[in-house]
Image 1: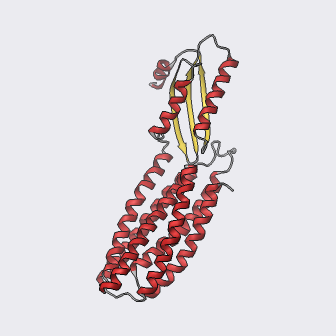
Image 2: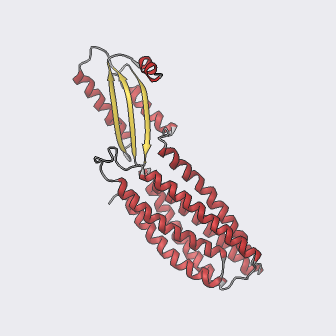
Image 3: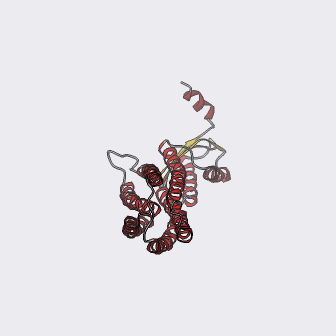
Length: 297
């Protein structure tokens, strides 16, 4: 099992435990903040399950229907996760406003504090694990999941602080006000997830750092005289690269092919955490101006 899929199994299991704990205490205590956190954990559970099946589908080999595979399921899953986070935030916002209008004091504050402490510790370990997997694999779905649980970690810390203030001051309005703050933070966190997923679905160019890495490999190759029409797009854990390399007209096709193989090997090494697909067009002369002219018609 790939590390990414193991990460989704771990996050799903953790979310299931947190849902049970928080939902029980949230319903009995009447705390909007704890209930909001329980709803968020329930959505975490749903999203983590979806992410597992998304990664499983994205791993399938190309076939007669999907010649390039199903890797775009990964950015699609990230967009859906961002939308789910946003809608859950709107629900929390609604509940918080309703509690301010129809005021009702909290109960079982001490029990709520204990549950949130346990939730904070468990979530902290999960975030550390997901960040490790995200850095190692550079998988977009895991990055989105890590960011999602990081917002949970911050909200859990804020809820703990609020419960402490409620126990100390007796002011129960702190609870719905904090719930509103959590809702706005969740929406703020969801926006970059949705944006990155949409850009990948639209085949946007990769980061400037990745582009510079590929350009550096091409420019360091002494057996080509130049290159042009470099195009790169990412699709989940896959990266697709096409480029025209310019050779001396006297080089044999065999030798040019060996050079192309060497370039492909260097690029794959630079992006060893991704599935790299490279198409190198071998030109006997620089036809970049001709290609530009053809693109105009």
